[in-house]
Length: 273
Image 1 (cartoon, rainbow, N blue to C red):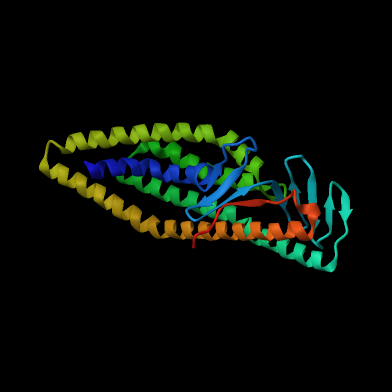
Image 2 (image 1 turned 30 degrees about the vertical axis):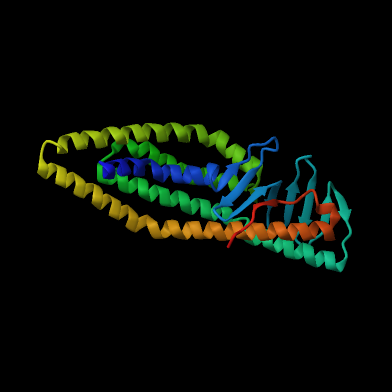
C-alpha cells in the first residue's frame, strides 16, 4: 500500500515540481508590502529588488519609485534621462557588473524550462504506465507552460526579470494550472484504486500490479533522477552567482552612489558552503 501511495504522489509531483520551482520554492514571494520575490536554494537565498530588462544594446533597471536607470552597450549611464559622468575606474566597475548580469540572469529561464521539460517526462511516463487518458489536458498544459515561461522572460527583444515577470505569469497561468493539477490528481487516484481493487481479487493480479508499479518507478527514476540532480545543481550555482552579484552591487553602490537604489539582488541567506 505504501508503494501505491507513492505512485499516486508521483502523478502530481511532476507538474507540481515545475509549478513549485517557478512560483513557490526557487522563486518564492516575500510576505511583505514590497511584493518582492526570492531566488532560493537550501544554501542560498537572494531577493529580487527591482525589475531589469536586458537586450544586446542596453540594460534598463526600474525601481519601486518607477525611476529608470539605463546602461548602454558602451557603458554610458543615465538615470531618468540624465547622463551620469563616470571616471575610468567607475567605467571598469560598471562594465564588470553588466557582464555578470548578461552572463547569469538569462540562465534563470534556461533552468526553469529544463525543469518543466523534466516534469513533462515524468507525467508522460505515469500516464503511459497507468493508462491515464485524462492526463492529456495536464500534458498539454505542461507544453503550454514552456511557452508561457518563454514569453514571460523574453519580451520585445529584452530578457526581463523582476516582480512583473512573476506576477504576470501567475495571473495568466497560475489558477488554470492549479485546477488542472487537482483534476488530474483526482483522476489518477481513482484509476489507481480501481486497479488495486481488481488486483486484490487475485494473487497473480496483485503481483502483476505491484510489478507494474515497480517498473514505472524504475523507469521514471532512470529518466529523471540524473537530470533532476543536474537542474538542482545548476540552480544552486546560479543562486550563488546571484549572491556574488549582490556583493558586487554593494561595492558598486559605493563607487557609483547614484546606483544605490537600482540594485537587482539582496542577499537574504548566507551560503554555508
